[in-house]
Image (cartoon, rainbow, N blue to C red; front, side, top):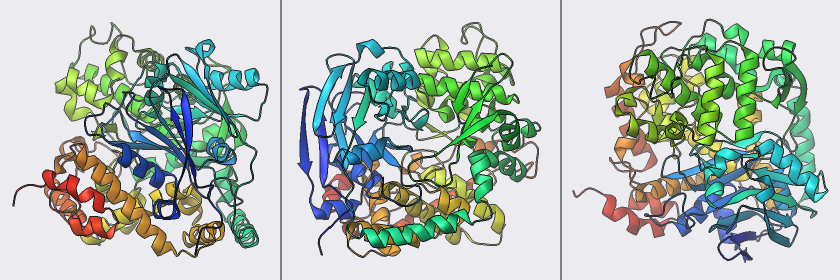
Length: 620
């Protein structure tokens, strides 16, 4: 059978060096093998990959790829993947963004976009269906991301235009710079905003008018109608609308996994001052949602009084609240909102920024850095004003901020003595869940293809629920399942929250996809394709020099016992971690050094990767 919907079968290529564009027609084999989103992005990165390419050079490509379900009538279908070689880590990187931007790219008639080269001056890309132009963005130089979005719409004269942009941090190629769209929706991780900055590309504005192709609209509508009703009847549906991911603060604190004082601890005594209840009762003024999402988990908040009065922001989500709350010792929710606003406007990843600022606070506390290192600024836990100043310094690469702007690797290079307290994997700072209490979380961070990010695997809740009475084989299998099903959502272009929080059956996504493309797929078949893409990103990383030594959680999880809370005294056992990593490799079909075997690559349809793996294998 042939594809009858779901795709336009077109990739837009933009060459900024030549100020030219062309459209590539993709074949059905490519479309279905890699599905879309992160799958298409990873394959395109592989096809353009050169081992010696600097991530911030014109030669590095960046791929923007919604999925085949993005923009269709079904729950939470507004996700887009942005893929490249990351300046944060030096290996494969991707980041996921919600909202409407990727849907608009699809409505312009493109399934994905590949950008390479460097514009001769600061520019923005204007896509008006088939009319594609590169225009000067000099008038927007130095503007914040949110301001740029507003101003571009005003200048174009159409408030319905969708805009993705970078702030001053992206322009200055800060390695934690993000891409922002839809008033604060961010592709936050792995430094994708720095790549746009390196290409002199301030923004992408899109107006699309096309209907999206669906093979069996009646079937899709029927499945979706039932799905919307099922979600709306869930007993937690209204709660998630009210608080969104801010509800996780209380859970993480009670469970003893919330980052506190740079992950020295996992319990925050003042968590009740920064939780979802505080947000809902004192700050919340509205809801926002990505395309087609009934959950509307985005919270619009306003600071009504105090030194941050007037701050309005969509957010924070749990990660931001934890990294700029408990992890830096701040218990003033208005300060968290202000930090969130500054990061969104400057265009900075809140996880990385909060993590590295907490590192510097601890370093100063322990006399590992001097006042001179910190530009004369004393850093202390709970000092929100110094946190705001550090955010600004990072964004504009001023003083100590210039080092932090280089990310975890840059901090360690300048101050090697800080290596034990920089909580990263492969150069990407750890998300806001401690890994000492759950070996599955440590394994998920360690083996994530982009570095320590929870989006690849979040098995900590299951492990805490199950307790100790299950073996390492089952735990490794749980991590692999998470690393397969969660990236599948990114390939399809849908949000994972209905599945995570409301128990939405993942088999339904196979039904959505089958109705969209007109070819029957089971969930097992889609998971196989997702696993193939994980082998592909592993092959990319092996080509770029990744080894088994890089598959390890932050040193703190082995060395520093938790101080308080339900897991006081706990550390991760290093020998047990080595054992589960061996099991994980075996289960994945990788050799003892973490390199996919020839048989595994063949089974994944990646025969072209075999020759690149041979020189990386140790002589037997």
